[in-house]
Length: 508
Ligand code: NAD
Image (cartoon, rainbow, N blue to C red; front, top):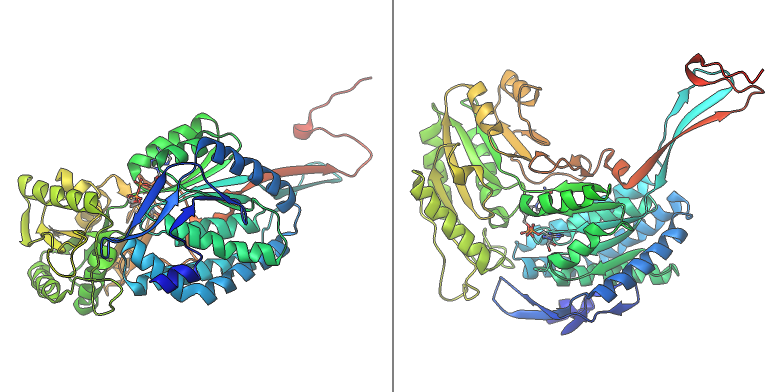
């Protein structure tokens, strides 16, 4: 790991603020402790208010430069950034895995997502289309233009410590915006590594400071960003609790926000499902990233005719799971992020029992050799009712609820019957069932899949969810529009001044 840290420019103690080649910090130290082995990886100095103001000044000045650079040229910079990521994929993926605790495969997958969004953004940099409209007045032209917005504040969660930043920043950059990233205080080193990689591109192209900035620290630094009228857009990823605070604060000052918050994702398993495929999808969805994906499978809504079969297969599959160091590819399940997460998991299991749920695969915390960090837990399964308070709540851990249904309409109502609306899936080979699920009477989530689980979205589609998931969209499709401001232009090239709606205004 030392060679990886060196290759990514990480030192024992790192400044947590940067505007590019300029690194500084006068706040207290933050320890980055790996959930894999409980070891201190490195320290990061956090941002003070003065550091924050320095970052804002630099970003404001960079915006004046960057918005003038033609969009395809900005795309070329993003292309180079994508190439640097290709070269650093192995090191960065390893750091993601070690600092966050997800499997090495998933760590590498996260970096691949960064590369993919860069490729997407490069093409998009030549496609920031506005509309041309027909005016009701003669010799008039109407059109829509999209202009750069300014500084984009990116607040990110621990569980996708690099990909979510890149979804935002790659699009924001080609749109002509500059970015200030407030990463999770649980994964600060990932942000330091990404900023070093950006810096190589910035220096090779003689770009000014401030196009990519990072400010490390806890929620208080996030609060400076959300309250700041210098920052027209805040893109915040994290818990619904955080989103409510951030969304309110940004709305108070008429700022824009993209909120990507908690999920409570279900798979409906009909009697027409291919059960072999279903079991693999359900187990990966529930235990992958130790249940710490916003799109993790939390509920299985199973038709009564296949309920026992699915249940038995799941119990057998869970018995095969190998839990341990996520850098070892033989293991299926790594650790939770920290001991607070372990306590939340234990509390949730207690609540399942107290609220009448029946645990069929016991959970528990693992101890002994290989589990010294105290963050490794056993994935659990419980039979439950959808309206139990604990089932309605997102527990960020590998706990899976089994719920029985009779009719598909009932199953869809159960799937939709939670406050969150991120992702959903149906397993069926019946076309009518699949189409009903995808129809307006079907899933109410931002993502609805057929014959794949709710997680593992591709960057080409718009990503995000409804209801308490916050309503934001990031990544593909036309999500770029959120990073720009729309301007409607009417241009009169005639000799008269006709008014709209036929209004006459004669000065005699
Ligand atoms: P969290 O809400 O604890 O923290 C997320 C970020 O918000 C951190 O950087 C934190 O410092 C910051 N923050 C917290 N309070 C703030 C405030 N008042 N003002 C400004 N910033 C503040 O979330 P977490 O534990 O890091 O991540 C897990 C959560 O994120 C889960 O709920 C998960 O579903 C969600 N998530 C959602 C998506 C999505 O796209 N919908 C993706 C990843 C994670």
